[in-house]
Picture 1 (cartoon, rainbow, N blue to C red):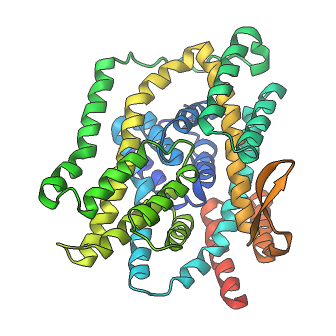
Picture 2: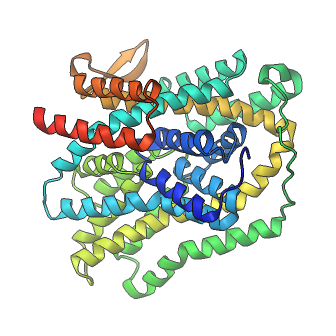
Picture 3: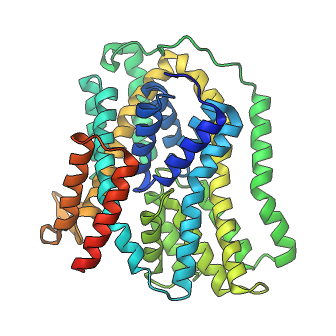
Length: 437
């Protein structure tokens, strides 16, 4: 910790603010969290933030939501973790629920797209600055910078599996801690003198058992009453499986979800998954929240014995529950052990290697986000035997580029806060988007 510990009431308001500003996928969400919790409030120092992020990047599920849960737990225990994690989900849940009803009843959501047009440029500016700031503090040696660069190329260009990259960099950091500690920078031991309390395996097992019982409770209630073939039961089973295989973030599993939802379960029509993804990208919260739209539409179209609106609401709740409850289990069971590892120099070396790799991954997410904000078209291109999805230069969106430049100027020169920046860019970008068509 770097400053005075906040009250639970103060933390509640800050976590709500973080949730409302969490646009732009994991890179944007991590950027907002870092800016508010580390730079502005100084509740958590850089090292502790990156330590938590490293752990969350290793978990299946949305890393930004798990990071919020971890930091909330760090400040106020389980209550703090539940508040931070649930608040991170709620704004996006209600936004996508409202947009899904509009979509299902064939109302025009073009105005929503226009309002969020300028928002994406502002979030991109926050992402770019966050990558620069975190890199400046974490990549303190050239070997660490080399790990970040190699990891960026591995995931953005070579499309190597995320777990493989993390495993390789963890092993590299561990070996360097034994043989080349200078390559990892200053002392690997934390600067503070705090020591975590002992953690019992019985306590961890209790958390896991209670958490899993809560996780499967809706399924146990629905199965006998609705039957194994009911759409809500199918959603609970499918998205529970999704929750434990989403390593590397939402991007790595969206294609699988789309294929299953359209071709196997026939919950969505072709192209509707992209509409849902657009909702998730344009609203606060994790990108994986797109599963809520899938659950909504599937239950809306196969509502019996409920009415369509009630079934759609239940579908949203079931899918959100199935995907996000495991995130709390992973954090509450694992975080106490991870905190104890901060004082193990070999583990700290491995995590410092992972930190560099995570920065490379975040940079690749930032590049993906920037490419889709600034360019309307992308084409598969073969470069030296490597297939890349490159932007078409002629499709650049000059309005987005101008908004990005303005957002960077406001942040760097005018020192605007996040809320003011987002408000101005939403109004400006939305107005210009509607005016210019």
